Amino acid sequence: MSINGNEYDWESMEIRLPHGVAVDITEISYSDEAPVEEHYGKGGKPTGYGRKNYKASGSMTIGKTEFEALKKNLGGSVYKGKPFSIVVGYANDDMATITDTLPDVKITKTDTSGKQGDDKVGAKKLDFKILSPIKWGDSEAY
Image (cartoon, rainbow, N blue to C red; front, side):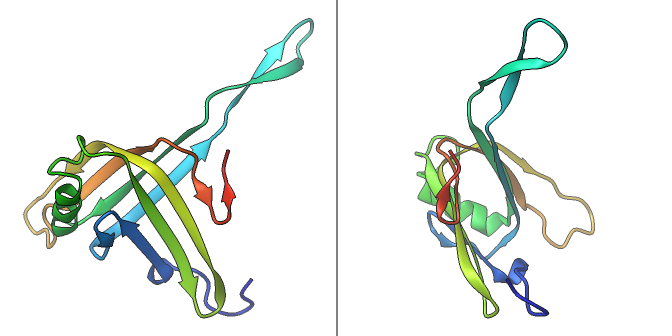
């Protein structure tokens, strides 16, 4: 833990896509969940619980050139390509290096827009499902 030092920030992150380190990326978000459902019997309090399926998903926003490189690496379509990994590294001089691995990513949605006055037309927001458990640092999520 850094005391009065440099914490992880955007500059501390390195994001690896199948074609290499992503340079033209402005956002990445990922999460997972392992939901439970309460079981009820007599009375108003849960008597137990049942486990539901593990789920993981995310999104990222990349520039047009980064998107084209990803698409090319996936065989010409972001939807038809095989699942791929995204590796997110956090590192700086004051903190230990942490690496999250998002295995078996499949893109499910692509969104783009442009308007008059934009200085970066064609950026793509990609939504994705993560088909295997996220590896958070040194630990698998599930």
